[in-house]
Amino acid sequence: MQIFLRRLSIIFSAGALGGLVNSITLWLLGKFGITAMIGVKIAPKLVPMWLYPRVVWGGIWGILFLLPVFKGSPVRRGVLLSLGPTAVQLFVVFPFKALKGYLGLELGGMTPVLVLVLNAVWGVAAAYWLRMIGEE
Image (cartoon, rainbow, N blue to C red; front, side, top):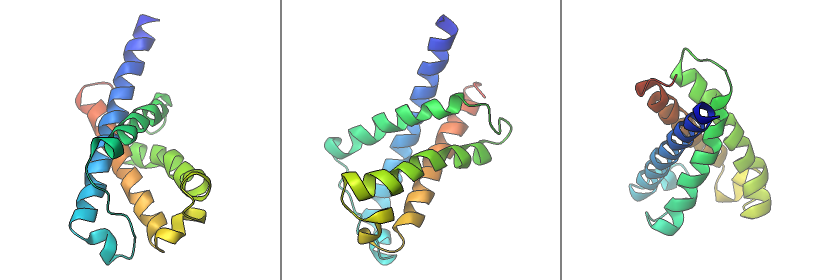
């Protein structure tokens, strides 16, 4: 049990780190006008109220790294596992929680692509962290 809890803690931490990297990436894209340039109305402010839930949810989604898939490639593994949070964001959060339409299209036509890329950033960052500390 102790080994499982240790592993779960490490995986949560990796997911939280991925959430932080994802969030800072999105903030920078908004700050430098890149999201507006591609027609997506997302430009968050880097404040604790916005950042905290994203880091926590990144940690929770990190539990996907318990699945034994693509152990050899952090990029493939991170991108594959990022499809879970991407699907939830596009098909649950945007249409039902945030009221931003199916796939978040009310925020702009490129929103699904942006979400896919940013969640891949989350997954790859978490996967590389796990590899770097010797957990994968």
